[in-house]
Length: 315
Image (cartoon, rainbow, N blue to C red; front, side, top):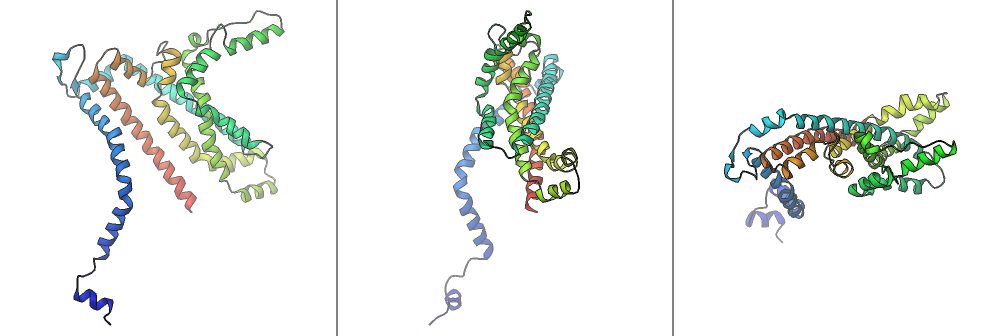
């Protein structure tokens, strides 16, 4: 009876181990290729087209003057006063929403980390604002809350002032504080997102160490300052980075609540006006490329934070 080695030496030789590993690796990756090709077609090809257009002098009002513009569109973007104002507005909007959402999310996460009756239902209700369609949320704040005639805020002022028999103020919230009106609407929507991230971080605290600190006489504030907050540092960074990525690109709230007026036009809305109102496709594409590059830089830091969290969890 011939052995396997004899058959191998007499017939075809077995493939080397490296070829077997490569074949098995391709066999595992092959089912993902259609999804990868689809993502490339949907996301990367439009970006490549935008990058090409950003180097062109292309305005729909002057179709005969289309041509290569080099870096002129990028120079015009950086030298445009309206674009600089939009950058500053975007920074203020993003920083305000992220900071307030993080603080509120941290407070709510600390409350929901405690055990009480109906905690699961309360957590579900707290997540609800994040699940609302952004345009619907903006319309809710614009008409149901901010409206000076029938909005909930002015209705509450009427009720409170009526207790004291005084004439209630009826401010026009959007006109009086336009940027804050957009910030509050976005804070309402993004606080649950921050709460979820921080609540996940609280669930990973070493409870035995915290219990030992309580036994040693540490109070709640000392435990929070010296143990809970350092543990949540990376989760706070992750929430700030991910929130910044999405809020920098926010268009719905600005378009719906203020239509970009009263100094609330951020970068996405300014790009929209350049593209659809001025029909300057080259300059709008250049501005969009700059925004994408900035978002990629922020996303890189976010990915590093996520990878560091996974490394710490694996220890």
